[in-house]
Length: 228
Image (cartoon, rainbow, N blue to C red; front, side):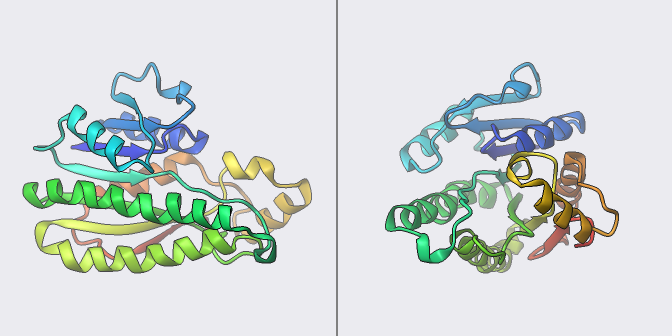
């Protein structure tokens, strides 16, 4: 089993992949600009530089890692999101959102699907979050709405090849975007969580492990959010 993960340099992705490596998975992680320092010494994780928006680079990387005869789980941690009211959005941000959150995601899945079909195994795991639909996330939310439709169609089209497509909808974790929130907003978000605590990356890793092992879990949106 191979886990191919894009966007491995984010702090949350590094923690999740570290947890998955402890479960025995062999992982190929990609990054664009910043090397994921936490993963550099992990012998179960091989890292590659990749611009996910480049179809040419994607195919070149796939050829390099020789995954043709491997069972693959695909994770895409890459996301573009900026907190801004829609009236203040501009064409540059709209195009960037489409390029990263939608077009490159489609290219990524399309590149791996033939391998999954050939090997009659595949786990496509997409990521969404509880901020989907929140004020200031118009472009991000639009891309995540696309994701729900896209994942549902993949689930129906390729279930016969033992390929599943599911979404993990993540809550609040003490990484990445959480650090950018004000103290007031952090308190407000914590108050929404019944347990009044942030999630741990291992919770995400456990959910991924569950999906990999469960061929009858398909077309699902699984919440890892503490019950928000």
